[in-house]
Length: 144
Ligand code: DQA
Image (cartoon, rainbow, N blue to C red; front, side, top):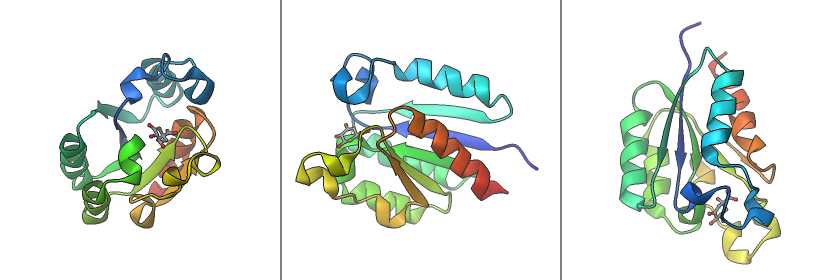
C-alpha cells in the first residue's frame, strides 16, 4: 500500500484549543493532539494547517485536494456559514472527513446547519479531540 498522506485543516479559533471554553472543547492543545496522532500512526505523513481566514482555508483545500491527500476538516464556525468552503470540498477529488469536537446538534440551532456535510465522505462529531483519531481511522478505511 502506498504512503497515506493526511492533512488536518482547522478553522477559526481552533488555534485557541486548550484555553478556549474548556468545558466545551477540553484543555488539550491541538499541538498535543497532533503529537499523539503522529506517535500512534508513525507510517502516516501528517500535515497541519490552521487559519482564522476563510479564503486561506479554501486555498488549503484546493492545494491538498488534488494531490492524493486525505483531508480532515474542522471548519469551525465557517461550517455553518461558508458556501465557499462547501464548494471547495465539492470541487476536490480527495476524501474530506468533517470533524467537530463538540456535538453541534446539541448546541444552538445555527450550528445544526453544515455547508460541508453534503460533500464530505463522512462526519464525526461530539467525541472531543478523539474525533481527529477517528477521522484518521476513517481515511485508513477509505484507502484500503
Ligand atoms: C466546532 C463547532 C462549531 O460550531 C464552532 O463554531 C467551533 C468548533 C467544533 O469543533 O465543535 O468553532 O467546529
